Image (cartoon, rainbow, N blue to C red):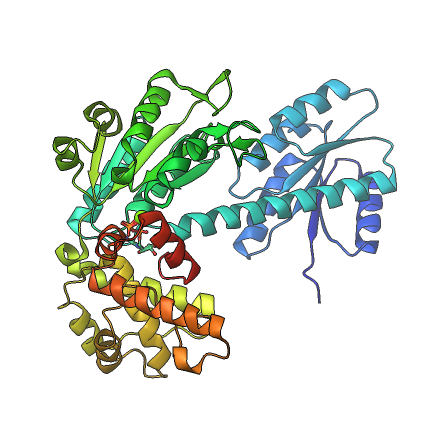
Length: 465
Ligand SMILES: Nc1ncnc2c1ncn2[C@@H]1O[C@H](COP(=O)(O)OP(=O)(O)OP(=O)(O)O)[C@@H](O)[C@H]1O
Ligand SMILES: [Mg+2]
């Protein structure tokens, strides 16, 4: 049976109450009535103690003692208030306008027309549902980027995030692979005044040097060979929000000069255009390289470094906060269960102790991947130490765990030559990435590959998130 929806009717005239009650009950609503503001609020309080609420209140404007506007205020002052629709006498439009300003969702004029009443109620219910969905969605998003952990270093980091979020300052986040730099960047954005604006991520290492300008600043149609369409750049797309420049240490020098200019002038010009446009954004950058060393080696501009590094934030490696492993593991096991639609596995005490003795070169990402792979072996007893050992023996879990659609099955079982090549490549990159601690930059160097090329491969084989 569908959930019953309750409407509270507040009117000092008995006839109005009775006819509304009849109409609404006929439509399937539960109806409460009250003769005035005080009675209405008392009824809401009393029902709330019994765990019941009204979704909508129909409230007369002209009532003796506590009038409609005051009733409205008292109702809206409650926690999770119902939607209030005002009922005004003929010609009382001024009060109705005031009521809407105070937060009423609609007003109806007497004499009441049955259809208008029902439409107004169903509109109010729909808006309420949308608002709830929206809130849930927002909560889901912020959960997705939740920064788990209560080690002192994380508590301090969280305080720094809160402080910097309220400013517009550029932030440079440093930390090893997989420590949670992106999470920190998202948290800053979500707790800032720009939260409703866009969050645009640019992986500076994944863009080929010759395309970086057009990716960052956009281009006009025909501005160079291959520019078939006009393109909005990342800076423009982040207008009003936050631009996250990931792997900033890998930005080519010529692009660095241009980025600096945009940050200084707050204006961006598309490639092939003569017009500049104003932009308003906050820049957060992240790197696992030592930018100061890059500055000394003249591969990173000192002036840009100063501009980006107004507030430095360091994310600690997991081995410096092994106390957080339990919390993180519980979080990931829940997340894995949700994603796969299976019951959540627990971690045995022995397994947890084992994890707490690892040094996690791939940090939190590695922990997550190891757990994901281990749940494949786990049964009702949960994830046990031997499952973790098996996973770690088969590779340190630095690359993303095998998924059902993973092409990294045995190449020799591949049905076609194409599939054979895919599987071999995937296995190769997975192994190499593991060997180099999940560090893409180093892996690319060791394999003598363009970093952007390697990124494409990793993306294709789901080897990195
Ligand atoms: N404190 C944390 N709480 C919850 N999840 C975390 C935390 N830190 C990291 N993770 C998870 O670990 C993974 C890696 O995190 P993230 O991508 O933010 O790392 P990173 O520092 O940007 O790594 P890289 O340098 O490789 O880009 C993500 O799946 C992220 O959700
Ligand atoms: Mg990252």
